[in-house]
Amino acid sequence: MRVLFALITAVIAAGLADGADAQNWPARQPIKLIVPFPPGNALDTIARPIFDQVGKQIGQAFVFENRPGAGGTLGMGLAAKAAPDGYTFLVNSSIHTIVPTSYTKLPFDTLRELTPVIPLGQFPNVMVAPAGRFKSVQDLVAKGKATPGSITYGSGGIGAATHLNAERFRLAAGFEAVHVPFRGAPDAVREVLGGRIDFYFSPLPAVTALIESKQLDGLAVSSLQRDPNVPNIPTTLEAGYPNSDYIFWVGVFAPSATPKEIVQRLHDEVAKAMNEPAMKQVITKLGANPMPLNPAAFDAFVRTELESNAKLIKAAGIEQN
Image 1: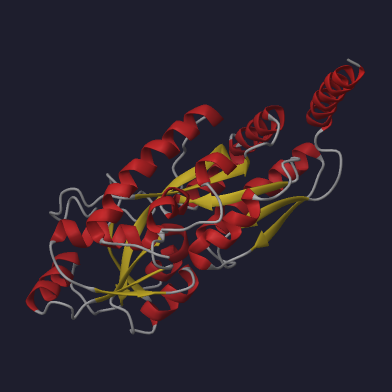
Image 2: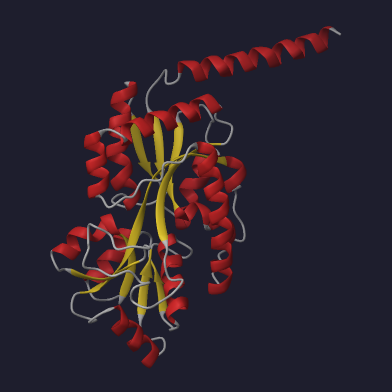
């Protein structure tokens, strides 16, 4: 009986301690944000200014830790296995809903070990090509059909969101192309700039300046409507390729056992930061469109997209060990 009483007391005490920790969060520095891709990617671009503002709001520092490797799964795994104490979070992208299907073996369970906190925004991807190589997206497709396998396209890695975007477009347009994966977006952009790759579907913020300076040609955007930041670039749907649209998004996740109070607090603080007039201008300039979802709605979105991506991955024959 005494043993049972002691166990019950310990459980109650642990629960009270968790509640107190959540109530007092954040009580120490720093709060770590793991980014599973190299510096300079679209995740960094939008997350850094937002969390700079969140840090000012709560009086605590956020430290970004870029941990690239294995198509984003290295950083994801580190976040999934991190202590669920509210001092480690993951900034991830659409890859979150891709790797559970594209990888046959993962050392973590995306849905069970990482819980959605808040989306930071969604971006159109833009098909970029070496300046002057193609007259239009239709020209690229025509050349791909005329000589199957002659067109090359880059991605941020096998099974990356940029890979799926290109595959969705390729399947919709009906042509063959050779996939050349890289470690991340900066490498892929550099290869297109150098003329060694024919096209790459890049998150718009990473290449807007290169398109404006005519160092790269923007042939089409993957969103449902044209993007106001590049209004002269047509959508892939406008170009005549049904079911070719694809949205790239960025969001924040926490280890699944993180107290709900902390998850909700971080969600609220990020939402507050993103609603600041000055921050709205920054986000708009980056080409991001809002995704105002609470943690439950974001979780539902993630699960739905996981099912959709699983079908695309199967159709494209993408698989990793």
